[in-house]
Length: 106
Length: 257
Image (tube, rainbow over all chains, first blue to last red; front, side):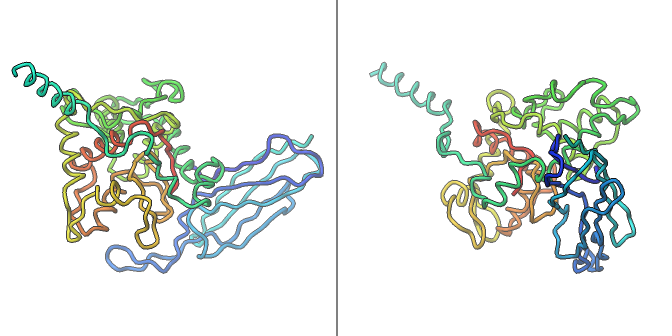
């Protein structure tokens, strides 16, 4: 399965905030559910999410078990120059996910 | 006298052939019409519709080689965006080789076994759901148009009988809710007309994508009826009847519910 779907506008006016949308493929297992034989399903939620713009942190979030599966995040970022938006997240299982998208400033 | 009799017989034949639907085309409402504005917005925007994750995965599977034939879907069918436009609309459909009625999942699995010489995917597996969603996605916006005359007739009639037959401890038929009481509320939920045009669909309750058969099984569970196993002929027959009943509504895959 793909890890994420990222969406940013094609061309971004310099210095103007633009919307970043990211849909992350993740079960966000709460840890409160039981499987078919009554054994607890271990918690596995995304703990941290970070968005860097050319290495500099532009947005970060701490997620918890209250967030549904396949979380969808929308936030605003301002860019002065064209560059690379890189996303990174880490779940309870220690699994790192990442994605990135090039941003063109006009 | 004889002429009148012949006339009466021909009228009977015409009525039987025309197959009146309980809900005419003008009264058909997709399931999304019964959803809240937030769910409607989620479905209509491809950046927020989580079903697209499955569609994207299906695209990868389309190009993945498999089986003893070491071929991918793309090896024979090329670019799905061009060659598979509209193929979901006549499904479920009669398959001449086996004499059975195939829904899109069964069609894909048959192709896997016959052409790729690979093992079929399990029903409700992520792979089968993804590829089905990807193929059905190519028909998004096109109206369902199944064939019920000819060899599919028997399956259609079985599906229709199943739809109007009372089931389970609640002693309810599909028609009780979806023909007679759609638009009303059942506890917290709006009762839809029971069209499967959005499937495979992302259900918020499932936190994932599932097939129409899974949805039907959930309905049967709700009325405390026996649930045929995934892929059972009863479910495919019912899918065929539902597709005919929803004829004219556009495919929405991947829907959000």
